[in-house]
Image 1: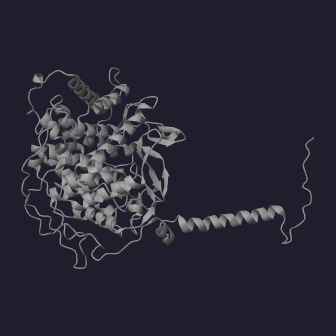
Image 2: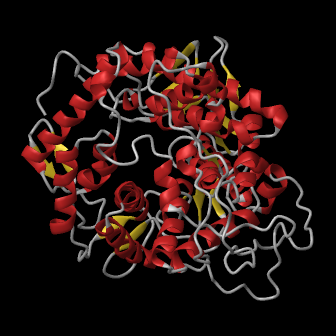
Image 3: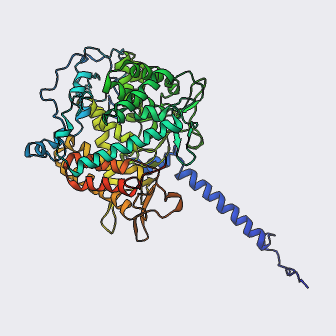
Length: 563
């Protein structure tokens, strides 16, 4: 027989409240105090937060806005570089002179000096707009296609020396294996999914997805430059023919501004600069024009999602749809300057210069760039800083803008090194086991983890080391090597020898995934990218060995694949 316990009588308190009632009342009060505390310290626009986390701001005359580059009297024809960068030597040709010039070769593909006569003729802003650095005026961007071609390792298909005369070597065999892998991937895509955005290898069919607003052929356009550089001539011509005949822009869906820019416009621009084929230039410009409505916001900071038919919005998960993401609006500069150069339409350059202006004016906690910014108010929406996802390519585009401008974009240079110093001061850590990593920052509290996406930073820091302050150059080269070593450890310490999506440094565990939701590998290239940059700069064979490890453990070498 079940017996129910009847509560005994509890006398009322002097205030007329029984014990359970007092407990509920105290619980309510504690919740109210917590809510008030959170509003005081955690809301992004809180004045209390600014006093705690932001250094005192001293307003200096003339620093309110960033000067526009366009329309500057320095928009004139520039002299060509006196010593074009030499071609990268073939493997095994690392003589003393090539090693001595290794640092000068870094980034040479992007250092084309402005030689064109086309001026960027945007009208100057009103007289009330003062220059940020009047003593260091920026020079308008201009791209010289012929200078670019002269710096290519393989300027024109079919003009390279007879490969039969090259020495047989392990490196050459590995290179051919990589080429075979690309051919296998292309043929599988062509067989099962030609014209679709993606190939699903398990079901062997194509997939369009919802990321590109109805645009198709993302894999084709993203592969154009790779097919060309690998001298896969038949495959490249197949891709080119598809772009000419089947890549249509009359779509009306919602697309990611960032993804369309880096994959479609970036792919088309790369193909144009490699080949000079007009079809790629024309398609890139027309598609760029379809992205412009995303910038119709009070600040000019674009929304993350562009509707090719009507309105635009931010991603629903990005602070309840009210924020734009640093890595997205901060990764437009390279492509949009080229769109202006190739079209003569200044609107593309004006859009990305305005983004720089907003970022220069806004206060930054300890010099760091948070990941979420309101396109309406121009204020940070959350104090989360990451060199991995949500922030990564913003920093990459800064140093590459400096190099692509033939080292005339001083604003990009200053922003990059200022950000890097803040990252080094506040995010950089060394684990008890001696591994260097870049943590994530949440309102002053560190998450001791790195995402796979953050592993590009080893290559980025190596790329920018040459132009750092003299006393920092050796430090940055060493830092690049240490971060790349840490990312390699994330591969070496996994069961499959392929790196996880994120890895942590806590509880005595280092460079390993600690959560099931982060224990997967989705063909991300960032780690291998850093191997490539470090190899180009140092010619240390360890980076080639690490890169080949990724190939062998993937199961493609020797074992083949099915799709």
